[in-house]
Image (tube, rainbow, N blue to C red; front, side):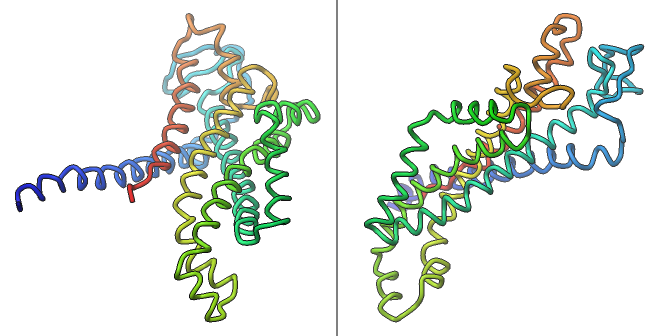
Length: 277
């Protein structure tokens, strides 16, 4: 009996160990990307916009560590700027979506009736528009600007937080411990901090990681089809478009933004892993 019980525990133990390791790997990878984007320029100060037409499409070397693009601009300088832009936009969009999404979700789940129906209607209206179409609409109003992409992505992402948190709050608010806290006279702030947020935090964290991944891909996709940020901005999707005609002559240049995009998405996907309950 002991052998059987041990036999059944081993796969679960391995699963519980592997998931934290995956999250640790995601956090480490994200930390390395942040260090690359923000710390490397302090050590190797290279302008991402300076052109040296005498040295175009050069391979990685001592003078240019990652080579130069068709206009002689440093790939190291451009990649660091692109990483700062993508990560900054992703984190800003996620924070701007998570805060109202959680607040409105808790209010709607706590106050069923008119408040819940009104907020649900607003969320349904946003969901009626495809996310990419909404971002494209804002990009058309203010083409080529950082803030149009930021607002569009945040408007798309907040609905997911609202729906998940509203559903979870409806369940949690009827739990015995919450009912006891309300009967004892504890206020909404205490109940949220003590009973709701500890249960909501893992779900919100997972949504935030997936949302950041979605934001990075959205910005790169729009840049790749030339309807996002405009040149000479260093952005991963835009860099792929600029380097694609030269992939046979200098394949290492096109590989660099592709690998950087893959690593950013991978880091957020690893962070989104959740331990089984």
